[in-house]
Length: 288
Image (cartoon, rainbow, N blue to C red; front, side, top):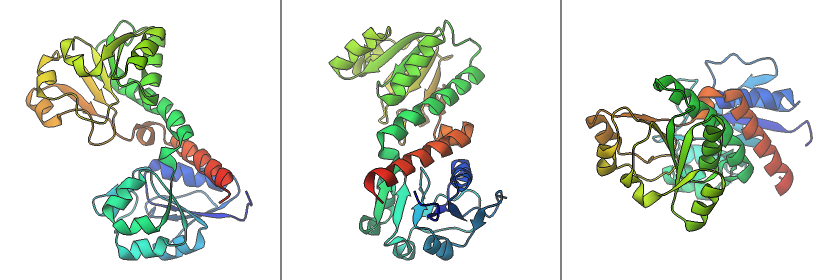
């Protein structure tokens, strides 16, 4: 890419802070909006909303862009509402974002904006699985009085995250069961050396030390939660609404942890680099 190209990093958490610095280190001009509380290294220019967007050829929104009716801005008290004015400002721009559906839900005018969703790209999902798994293991180690080695673990879901989670647990010496809904996945789970479980029948056996849920629909309802041991740790890694009835879990005094946006909390530098690498690939592949 031409090193005269400019980027506007608009809102977000520590991932976007690291993203801005990484892009700047590559020699591109970076304008940062919504980072009043951050002291960037030399080369990054903090701007107001109108000037930052107008100066950036590409605009990059957060992985989780929406917070209520506002843009998800962590490091500034100046709120950016997802209103008609904001949408008008982005018209004609190449806007990279995560979870583009949440923007469209917040304001239908986003249907008229050129949204490029990096969170849907396969390379983003694959790369992002590893820091998510590492962070989930940190939580499990913190919460448990056991070692991962020898623990009886259940991973619900055999997608990208479920596969990475079960593989690393197995490498650490855990006894791993993995749930899936499709017959072909049961065969693959067994080939990987894990015990396959039918997702719809996980309630039949919930005698686990640690459960990692990756399925973004509620499978741990009241009946399932009542069958869990009181000392079981349930870590919900699924995107909202998650896979657990959290109100019921609290009533039952279970150790259930909703673990969202883990790469941004535990591995922001790598998470920012993953966003950058994905966006660079999209620009090159699509000739933007």
